[in-house]
Image (cartoon, rainbow, N blue to C red; front, top):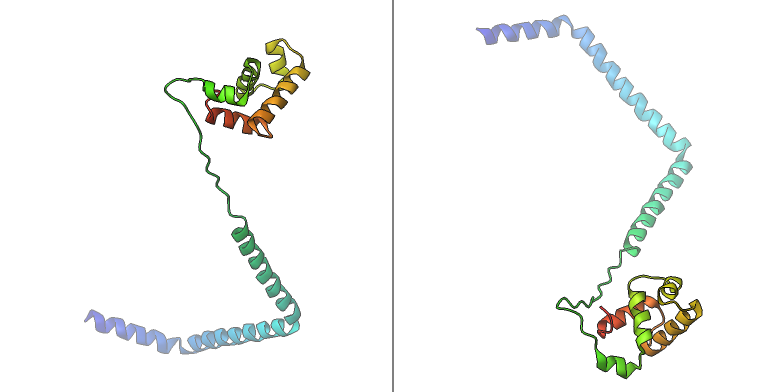
Amino acid sequence: MFFYSFETKKLNFLTKHKDLILYGFSLAILLFLLKWIELHFVIINHSFEIYVGLIALFFTALGIWLALKLNKPTIIEKEIFTNKKGFKLNEIEVQKLGLSKRELEVLHLMSTGLSNQEIAEKLFVSLNTIKTHASNLFEKLDVKRRTQAIEKAKRLSLIE
């Protein structure tokens, strides 16, 4: 009974507002056609700008892709030498390299992060003396930088 009354109300609504529904539907179709025609005119009138924009987007995407491919982060793994049991100076390497006690002191102070000036003040010597000791250390350890000297000295058990 309820179903029948709902259908009849629906049918009555459609027949009663038939003109209004057809008018709304025809307006929707006309609006769609006008927008479609407008889109075609925009594309025809501005085709050069559209093509340039698409090419620009393509090359932008290509540039981003290349940048991501070429700039991969580089991970460098390096072995770190530690002596957890207690430090024991490698006397054989000290004699083999010909390091003096003062050079060992300078090397140890370098490993603590002190500058040449700070090392000179701590050992009560001139800055030029420390530079000479550092130069001799670099030559004897066959390195070019402080960080290389410290790393090699740790590896050879010359410092902690």
